[in-house]
Length: 114
Length: 116
Image (cartoon, rainbow over all chains, first blue to last red; front, side, top):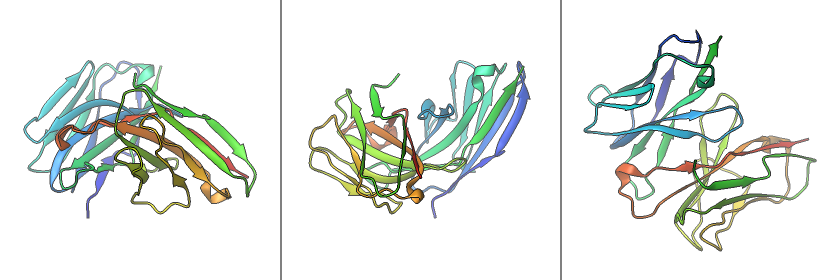
């Protein structure tokens, strides 16, 4: 069964600190993995997308890693800001259909305190 | 910022009412999607469309229906709303012709529906 598991479920950090969010998946055949940021009451916004051949990608203070062998990904946030408070969702796409079906994790709810 | 819009953003209605959630995109995307999301839970695909006059049911069974008469417009309708329909509904779109390795979906802001 294709699944995406994220940890931790929630995380509280102080402003300026770094943090790392984890994602494990069983989706096969694998196409790509992306991290989305979803602010409360808003739609998800893409942060990074990685294909099988990419093992790291950065977007400003966000750095995602991918280990396709162990089917794990992480999202590292550097020097956190209050505006980073949001849900971070790991999404994996398969290449077994023309739809490019997406499998969503439940997200990690990050809260940054001043 | 993606050019995909949803209205209304919030809707509170009584049981038995008919409602239509609007979704429009100005990117010329062929593929469009509706997802349902409950608090703390993952997004579930309830409907999708490959293009005009194409509609398909997603993974999660839903009593809602959709239509795709125009490329840019993908409304979702509930004929008789019930409290179990209370949820957030997210619309998304992606470009046809992209390789499956980069099937990026752009999401609208969502509609928070509450049925009393």
